[in-house]
Length: 279
Ligand code: HEC
Image (cartoon, rainbow, N blue to C red; front, top):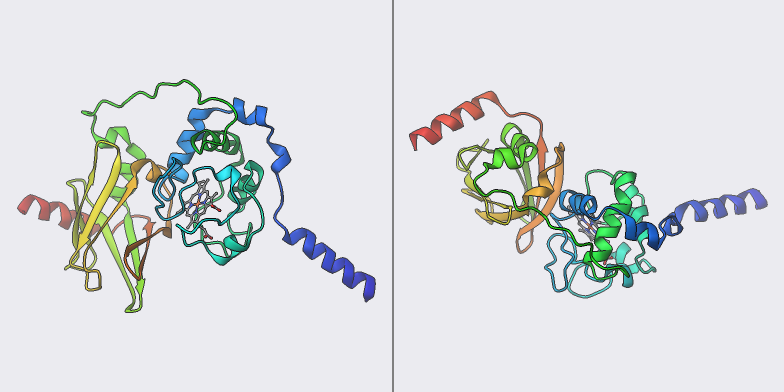
């Protein structure tokens, strides 16, 4: 038993420590990566929960300014999970790549809920963009001009995948607090209203000039009975289905999980458009 047992322990230790891809990205490779494509990946996959700029807000996740020179789970401003707080390493592009390729497997028990791994080909541009924006790059920010969309263009044309996804499917919410759990389904409508599968629940939504999508829900038979939440539109540009895609804290002691389910009941979509004409 002796040797086999020890070998098994060594195997477990080896396989259980997070893989390190650190060597896989040279600074030259990161400096040459496509900044704009990294920016798009960040907006679509990370911006709903993180800011990168100095003094930026923690949203669902911590602000990431100077990420690549700080230890994992450090700082008092953000309530990290114990696994991240106890992890004993400084973030490097390689460590972050390992996490994003295998979100649940890297540091099991971490609380970062991302719906799928980041595709490997998107990683170098993403890491490069993040290094520039967190102040950790050793190269200057590339000189690029980002064209502002014409404000007259309807949202359905500017963000077609966001629009189709949200307007044709069902948003599912699960609120959890010491009152227990409350689940309902909501339907975002083209006229800016929100209806739900429970008659008392109503709402409205809006996209502002910075392309931040905000919605308000009211009439919930729960505390809080109303709340407002905002995301960058870009964070919703990749159509995804799962009962829980994002997490937020609409009030002290309440956690909201939001997700998207395919389709919506027929009656709901037609009833809603009639309602909005009547109102
Ligand atoms: C749904 C929200 C959400 C999304 C989307 C998200 N994160 Fe996170 N992130 C979190 C949360 C929550 C934590 C804290 C995890 C913990 O404490 O276990 C976190 C932690 C982190 C940390 C650790 C910071 C530190 O100081 O140790 C990094 C790095 C990070 N996220 C990067 C990313 C990147 C890059 C993306 C996009 C590919 C992303 N996150 C997408 C919620 C999110």
